[in-house]
Length: 397
Ligand code: FAD
Ligand code: NAD
Image (cartoon, rainbow, N blue to C red; front, side):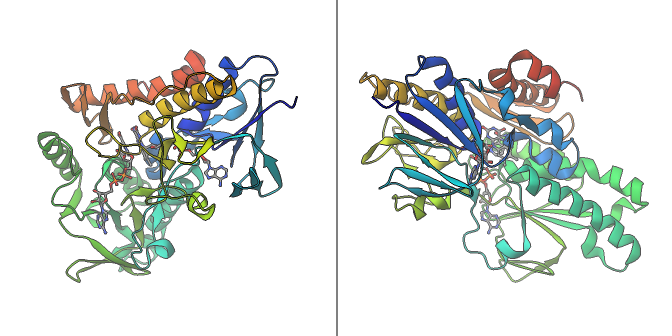
């Protein structure tokens, strides 16, 4: 009797929780579990706007995966997944092949560019630690370039495409970083322009209007210029072209206009909507009882037929539910329907400022900023206990 093999793809919010729950729930020799991820560390995606702007150290958004799992119970493979071969029940890695009996796909999202010309070629994306290291270094380089070519204001013009939560959180951090960079490079702060361009009629479409108004005001006071109800139509090496043909000259375009699922899933021949799999109530791939899809790769609908947004809070709940369902499947037991629990949303606006709704309560300003830290620290606590909170947690400012 061969021991069943469970393979988890991706050590993000969903994948790490799935691995930790499996190592807890499985009995000795009940299954072999392998976790595959691109890097030897888990990166805290929800913190990436800070190292991107340079307001926090990248090290604080990075946790060694071997510190989060029990190596006697889970094999960790640091590799890049290249292909899923569903018929052969195999996953092709850059440097090998893994066979599975049960597969958990948690590879996270990819930027949705809507085919906007030039976006993939010329814009930056806040999507991994390497990507945000490039953004931070690039921004700093623009200050140095401006000093040697002071007639080129485009070096100090930063365009953020999309005023969803990622865009808003990033411009909050960037506006906090600018004074420090101006001082360091001896640049007049008036030369720096930050544009946040949003196609919808409001920033943070769908969020509480009073909080949106408050957030926009906080960010405007910090120097952000919003262009609302205007879409980015094209990105060029010189900048962006907006809906009515207006051009903003800029050497730094950061696209936060949305996420889609992972291309590898559609390449494997599975049915997807914007790269995401419409999973069944147990988070399984339709027609494949051996494949579970979680986090930003999964599309799960509420009773009104609206999909849940791709968030860390849903990804971690999915990780826990799918681990339980894989164990139940192994034991021929009863699977448990996934019932998401939305605790709320708190978005940072930079130092000491945030907006949010927790339960039915609206929060703003310092209180919201503290709540945001509590939420971020909670994730560290869930995956690594108090020692990890003390090492990487956020307590001050
Ligand atoms: P991820 O956390 O993205 O993890 C995917 C993992 O798969 C990564 O470890 C990656 O390295 C690995 N991987 C990818 N491709 C491969 C490959 N080919 N081979 C091997 N490994 C691979 N949500 C909230 O709920 N609250 C927030 O405050 C919040 N803030 C955010 C702030 C920012 C700046 C951003 C960008 C997002 C934020 N989100 C937030 C959304 C949240 O981060 C995502 O919904 C969440 O990370 C999804 O979890 P996941 O497990 O699906 O994927
Ligand atoms: P999003 O899809 O939520 O927002 C993208 C924004 O870009 C939208 O407002 C959209 O109208 C705009 N847009 C699209 N095309 C455009 C164009 N051509 N020109 C200008 N604007 C355009 O994406 P996101 O902000 O990256 O968020 C992704 C997910 O992560 C969401 O589920 C979000 O809730 C979650 N998130 C949560 C937090 C938090 O809770 N603090 C922070 C970041 C992200």
